[in-house]
Image (cartoon, rainbow, N blue to C red):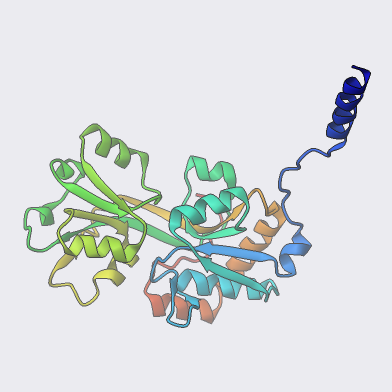
Length: 272
């Protein structure tokens, strides 16, 4: 009996001696500057996309590169993921930052957003030209009895989701832009909802088949390089924002805007 009690007591002492598991702490500014920065992205041309030699290029990717060089950071890497995985990995701190992200309440709880956005973004619909009725789209009411396709995890406004759900509108969510466009071409859904510059890039050379409804946007919002609150400290985010504002005054920035034909902005002074 005494031997049994001694074993139990020994186990309890050993258990209590185990240090508690610590939550992941944000990396110091010095560590981030020394090249431990991992930046997540999803295929989202022309903002970020993979080349045949597995490099990541695009407007946002190259603007981030210019900004990190402005900060004298030369050792970092971009990695491609499905969008939802990239976002969730940034929430947990596995990835330090994520490309081309707009704000919503959930994201503001878990991510740092710099004062300066990468770019302004409009989300719009595209339709097939062989359906003349769809070309007359004016409001969400015109979605009734139709179907919609989009990328899983993208940030559409609450009123859009509420309209879809309350009117039992069928929608398809997929992981990759290429898959989404192939389904659209095949007639799997009526309205393709996506970012306007991505859609322009997507339907290039197919203008006789598809129309972008540019004058009736679903949403217009800035997109940011958002940082994980779990693994990045606020000082680094502020440093990035200042450097990004400086880069937007350079000829290199103007060339990027012209090259990718995006909705470029001058440095902002107010948050969204």
